[in-house]
Image (cartoon, rainbow, N blue to C red; front, side, top):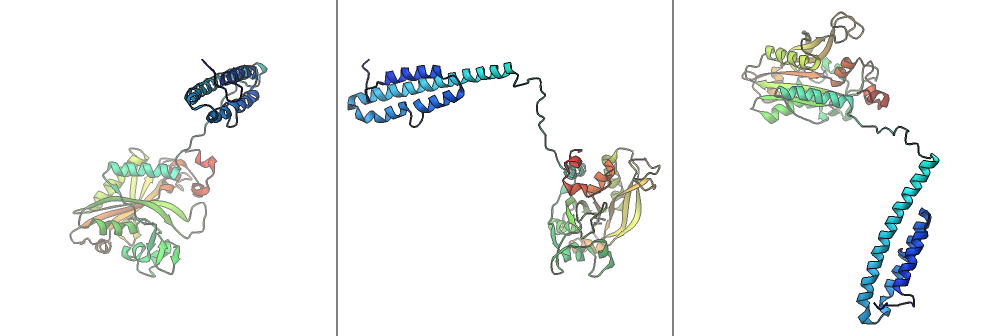
Length: 347
Ligand code: DAH
C-alpha cells in the first residue's frame, strides 16, 4: 500500500512511533501524557488527520479511513496498557502492604423511617384492615372549623384545653386537633355513611417540656351511619387496642368531656410495662390513657349536614407520639423533633 504523507512523516510511521512510546510508558502519569501527546485534542494523530485537506482529492478517503483505524487501534492499546499498569500498581501496593485486605469494610449506614412515621403506618394498617379510609384535611384552619362547628362557642372554657397559634387576627389558626376534619369529611360525604381516619399534624401554643410539644400528630376517627351505637365504638376501639398492644390486653372506658361528643369517654389500656400491677409509667394506676372518644354530638352531626334524628356516629382521637412513648418507655416527647441520631437510630 502506498503511504500517504502530509507532513513528510507518514501515518504509519507515526503509528509505530506511538506504539513503541506506549510500551515504554511505565506508570499512569506517563500513560496519561502519552495519551495527550498522540490522541489528545492537540495530539499528533489528531493534528495529522486535520490536515487531510492538503492531500490530493483522490487520496483523501483512504487516508481518512486508515487514520480512523489507527486511532481505534491506539485507543484499544491504550486501554490494555492502562489495565496492565493498574494491575501492576495494585500488585505493588499489595506487596508493600499499603492495602490491608483484612481490614473490615466501611459500614453503609441505612436510612430508616422516623418513629412517628412508623407508628402512623402501623395505625393506618390496623384501621385499613377494619375498613377505614384515610381522609386528609388542612393544617391551617379557621376558628369556625377548629372550634365553632365542633360545638366550642367563642369564649367557651373548653378552648383553654387547646392553646392556639393564630396566623392573623382571631379567625385563621393552625389546627389544634384533627377534629375539624370531621366537618370537612361529613360535608364532602353527605349523605353517604362514613368510615374514615383523619391523620395529621396539630399545633398548640404550649410551654415545651418533657410532656408537651407545640407540634405533634393526631389520628382522628369518624364513623357516621344508621344505628351506630356506643357498643360499636367500644367494640371497635377495644379491637384496635388489642391489635396495637397485643391480644388479650385489657381496656377500660372512663367518662370524660369533649364539646363535640356526647357522651364522651377516654380509653385506657392496661399498663404495658407492669401489666396492671402499678409502676412509674402508669403512675401506679395500672392503666395508660391512649385516646379520647365519644358519640358524635347531634350539633356536630347537624353542622356536617347529617340529620341527627336519622344518623348517628362515633369519633375518637389519639396521639401517635404518645402511643410510641408508651410502647417504648420514652420519657421525653422532645426527642421526636430533636433529630438526635442516638434517638432515631433506635427505631
Ligand atoms: N380532639 C381531641 C383533643 O385534641 C381528641 C378527641 C377526643 C377527638 C374525643 C375525638 C374525640 O374525635 O371523640 O384533645
